[in-house]
Length: 267
Ligand code: G
Ligand code: MN
Image (tube, rainbow, N blue to C red; front, side, top):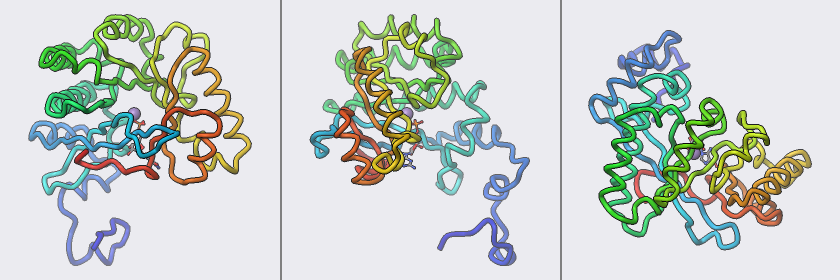
């Protein structure tokens, strides 16, 4: 049975444990809860498949999402803590854990291609760079199986740093994906300076695309721009067969979303 946080009757007899209580509270000390989960290694990746648009039985790669757990093993929703810690030292720690778990997964699974999310700020973090270098050193072909995803908003915070980092890592086989394409802060002027290998079209434009003329025009424009810059296109958040069919028709390369698989702890 699911416990409802909004039902005082349900809470009356069985008071919420301290963590659920803190999460429900408006002045929850989010950084303290995140720091505690990290300190106790209560972190794991959840993997979601990205499939080829024209042959959806074929998985092109997986994306690994970081999951932090409470002491009872319940997932702390990323949407609940990410915004408040992403730009802080804790955000670097989360990126570091996510990268280490991802690189370990690549080392253990020789056929795997895996995308890991990172913030541009992590490039200047010594521990994060060290994790990347030791992961790449573990096996010669790991770099070619690693994709690093940077959101538009994050890339635009430190564009020169991101451009230099990509130029350093791409010769070692690492690919880069521009996350939340179309929904963030990137301008076409800046897109020319980055050499992203792929873009992930934000789910905002994918939602009900089969019946939304606005989303059809916007997504087609994003696909046209991506093609011009020789970037591979991935549509995020695909939930229905109708959305998938439309995306295939307009030439998107890969599809990701609940229709093809939810993020789960095993590949
Ligand atoms: O890294 P990114 O900003 O792309 O994060 C995407 C988020 O969306 C993740 O938390 C993931 O679990 C979630 N997600 C993945 N597929 C779907 C989907 O089909 N629908 C919705 N609503 N969310 C999704
Ligand atoms: Mn992502």
